[in-house]
Amino acid sequence: MTRYIFITGGVVSSLGKGLSSAALGALLQARGYSVRLRKFDPYLNVDPGTMSPYQHGEVYVTDDGAETDLDLGHYERFTGVPARSSDSVTAGKIYSNVIARERRGDYLGGTVQVIPHVTDAIKEAVTADTDGTDFVLIEIGGTVGDIEGLPFFEAIRQFGYELGPDKVMYVHLTLLPYIPAAGELKTKPTQHSVKELRSIGIQPDLLLCRSDRAIPDSERRKIALFCNVPERRVIAATDVASIYQVPVHYHEQGFDTQVLDHFGLDSESKPNLDIWRHIVDRLLAPEGEVSIAVVGKYTGLQDAYKSLDEALAHGGIANNVRVDMRWIDADIFESDGAMQELETVNGILVPGGFGERGAEGKIAAVTFARTKRVPYFGICFGMQLAVIETARNLAGMEKASSTEFGPCAEAVVGLMTEWKSGEDVERRSAGDNLGGTMRLGAYDALLRTGSKVRTAYGTGLISERHRHRYEVNVNYQRQLKAAGMRFAAFSPDGELPEIVERDDHPWFIGVQFHPELKSKPFAPHPLFASFVKAAVDQSRLV
Image (cartoon, rainbow, N blue to C red; front, side, top):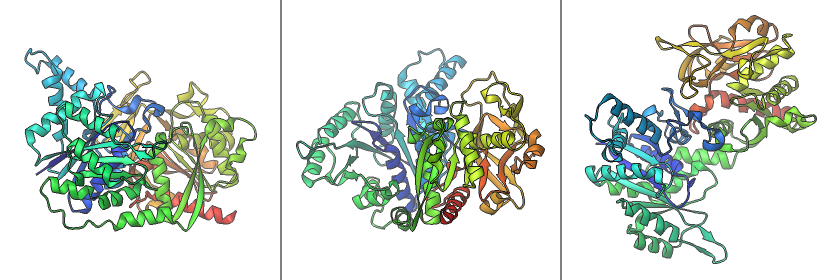
């Protein structure tokens, strides 16, 4: 029997509903249950694929090619369960589906309304594609009281009424702010948030209370009394040093125990959380440290590179070192004297991105890594710029560039117009819509025998997730090889370059895909583990 847990938020956004959902999923898994985690977002975009990283953070891509919210990355990193397109639902997707049904005449001439048509569509999304999973955890984006979120709250209210408390649970995450002048944690924001939730018909079964310090028993009792929640189900969600401490911390607070009690399931047995304790030990007490410069375009907002941030930390876990990530805006390298920023780092990473801004600065960082023999990792756009750098500086193609920046004489990187997706052929043109038209999702690649990447992966066939519209032009393979850059992997049909590397460099690798999307703390991605090891080796040479 599938049970459903809805995680809502109140008071303010960014309290960590995604992490709370992911941590609960990990705890339920540790007790032997299967889980599926989902994110329902009330905004009207169909997906975050066309949203600025400054607005929304990174776009997380699933194996089946969905562009989703970054919280799905948390879900995968904590549970290892691959996300699907059905796990990401927006108001834009719901309304698009409802309007499409209306145009087809599915509603038999009836007036189309939020209730029941929109709420029914949301409820359908709750239960779709669950495969008999034990627990489906669904995070509702935003905060209770947001006008755009009302259809979602009404839908989950109806859902709980229809299935009953033995199959549905409501978890509400709130904030207990500390007022220094009063020397107190204040419960009133939580009380008002629960009041707002109850006004639309949802009584929370458990409260997760975020705070920066322990919650006194007197305040816990007060919250329980005014919010109509048993005291044992007022769970303290205090700040911790690492997000990977959250599963252990929540278990110590009784979160998973109370969830199982709600559903009448056995809560006496103890989950095995040794893997999380091991991860935290390596993060908080490593044997060494390396510094990695991330030369990017959106470094002012770390959420723009959330999976990358975590994957580098996972590489540190694999090597038992702390990774000091130095987030550097690529624009600064377009001015004189800025290269000193890279003099003390042990590795340089240029991540994915779009557009010409900052590209020359990133190319300058590539040149520094190549000439100074500093380990270099180029991801997606970072691979393309590494190819352009080699073409310009070593292959004699001074005008080498990408058609993404406009017409150019030597288009070593160009717009993808055709590629294979399984047995089908995907075709695109420059005039297509921006949303959902890139090469998206998991694709296989064959690794060259004797390459560094084949050694790192330990296999000759890989599957990695893509999100790009431009591709390295294979017709320049001969000139690039003569300049020391080798194509180390291709798509199975041999048409699309997937990885480049340099044999004359300790560690210089560029990949067209996004390996950070598949890295997990308990299973660090092999390329990040190898890159951080190269940085450790480089640090010993300094």
